[in-house]
Length: 111
Length: 164
Image 1: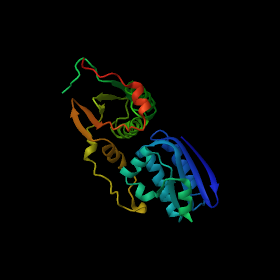
Image 2: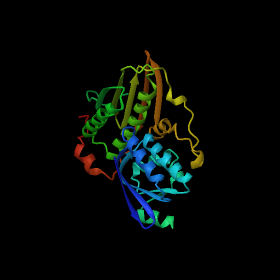
Image 3: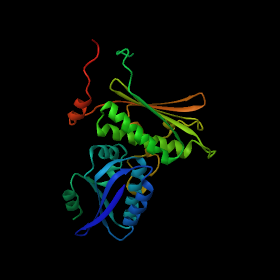
Image 4: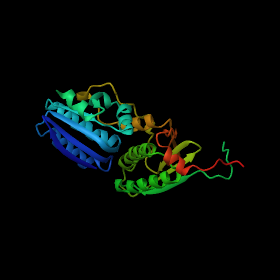
């Protein structure tokens, strides 16, 4: 599980790659929470490289999203593969996290 | 029930100890199962998700004595149905008795826990729990709907029809 950040104008983009599950969610959660509290208000998770996410991984994302919300920020997600999308839909997280098919769509929606 | 007599159902079993690091061995088993059955990457990922959710739950809650325990995981393909069975000798616990989380609550009020079993039930058609001989036995079954988007994998592992 890897998380790398980059900046696209005023949006902080975090690229997630690998498997986000019970074994990897600890360090991933620490990093996502750090990102959520670092002062950025527009945060986009690009999950193109994410193979799958289990409920432990969803929790990590939801906790970060809540933290960001508490700092008046917004978390969005883009480029989910079919499995990740399905998990987010079934778990009801897709309605909270504003999914976008492409990074361009997501960046535009922040404006 | 079984049509093809003499044809064994592909099965993989692994017995792990109650540590999260042992889930690596479940990954290896899913990998082997994938190679034998030619199931798509998506189907295998769903498999991994439910294994992660069910097993991390068992490891976290089934053994309040903090002792060493074994958890058995078995994967079987019965026709086009995929069956996962997880059994452990932990305290009696029926995960199906857990109330589903409120999926309509807004983010600020959203409960963070309780998603695991809900997700497992969404990803598989049938989930049954039994307490059998002092063991929790959770069985998950789902028809495989591998999409025609990956014909190369299906073709590669396709065997001529039996029954000759």
